[in-house]
Image (cartoon, rainbow, N blue to C red; front, side, top):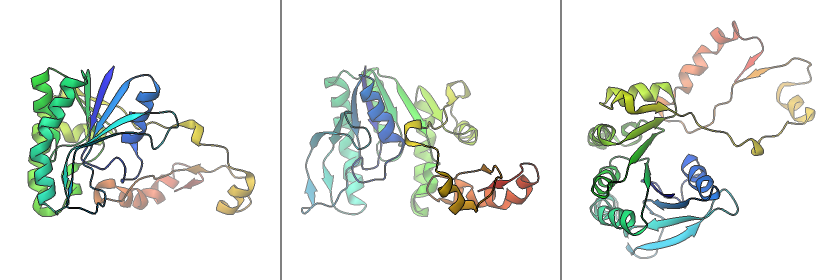
Length: 245
């Protein structure tokens, strides 16, 4: 298959997370994978033209064709210019690469453009919900971002969320419940190994006790709920023996 992923982050600059692993794993499965991002790395000039490159940040042997629309290095104005220009690049990519499906992660910057271009090209769009997008932006942008989210959720062909709470959230913004499915984050087990006993001793002290350990991995926006989890640990510890966070 020819698969296009679209996000409003920088594939090269932002920390590695699901967008990188999904794209590169699909590549290793034999698919032709393309990625349109919002490339805002530091550049010497104010204007960075259209670029393409093959990239892999996680898995050796993977190859994702990264497509970078033109970029204006001016705060706010640069994002506006990008939003106005990216539709034609998305549409051209859908046509020239004969894209079979789109995986969309964004709403305000290039999400609406992606859906309009895909609809014109008769290509299905799957939205991958991993965040509450309007809570990731400054207050003046929160309302327009939420409105963009609402429109996107109502017009995509499928929404895959990482938690039940996000499923309820997108449905609350108008998504068709029949189109919303839960797909939790995955784990690549080759990156996990049994820790030597010495490492365990350093963490908890020498003990024959078997601990039940909760691990939080992620960034810390307010809606992450880590504060709620911490406050509930004493209660959970009465139900789960030897609990650690």
